[in-house]
Length: 405
Image 1 (cartoon, rainbow, N blue to C red):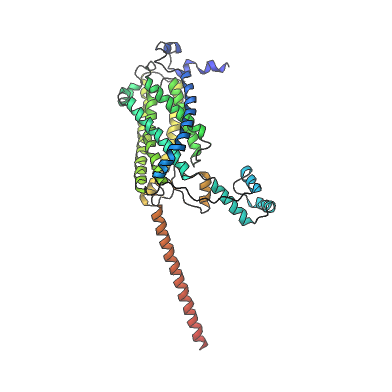
Image 2: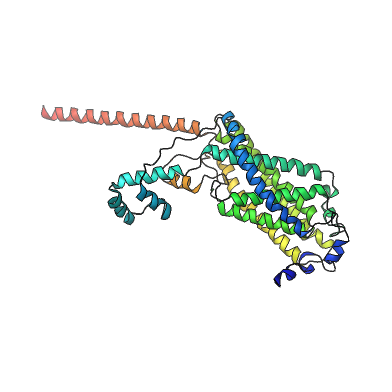
């Protein structure tokens, strides 16, 4: 209990010479209070419930309109012993474990391997599920971006970043910015609550770090009254996400290849510009340099900038994957998404065994053409091999007949 008073020391949250008593002179309605963050918890639960309703009643009709169809999956035959091993041990037995399973189930090794393959296939997320997740995120990001832009476009700090620090920390908080913060916090809290049941992608760990860093960043910036720069950070991130999610939605549908490609290219360009150019040169520069024109460094200054650096590191990680994707896209060799719409680990495991190819944004828009081309080449190669074999066989028969004569 003694740690709680130390946690709220002015030295951690406010510039030197400023106390909580000084902040109280602004009035309760005009200043951010740490207890306000508690409203993010019921908002997170509300978002979980709202998302359930959206994915249950709104997303399926949208998926049908875009021609989203689930793959046909073969259901594994009931087998209590194999099911118990699958849940408690691993999704694929090693050779030393195979003999015990063969004895207990009285099946051949081939039958057991087939059962595990079908069982893993059952755990693959359907296209409808992935479409519902993408559609939900798209509608939130679109709503958040429009709302954030409408409440910031007429503010002086939107055009001049030095205004973010004018008279800091005695900057009155507007009600629209309060709800902008709380809704974003509630949304990212709901993503953490649902992360165990959502589609598990290749960058799962990076996504968890991103959500935690975002929640800490928003919570601290709110308590320290970094609201002006915080609203700009949220708006900047939402600007590219509103293009990624519809790209996924069109990719899961049938016959939307051109729309998928266009949205992917637009997303890649906006992501690289906002996350690798504007974010470090404007946002981080103003928090590191311009803020020092108003106050001296304090603990909160370092903590806030460290969190921004963590986000920038994640931006670089995703930018490398997107650039690699974009290069393959231009070369016409794009086979799978390298970023956050990577199929789940179960599907990736099947790919390594020669399973079906993934379908992701900017990925499978040309898959049908590539498949037809591959089939035609295989057909030509097969015909060539058959003709060569017949010719060789005919010449050998002629030679034997000449020797016999």
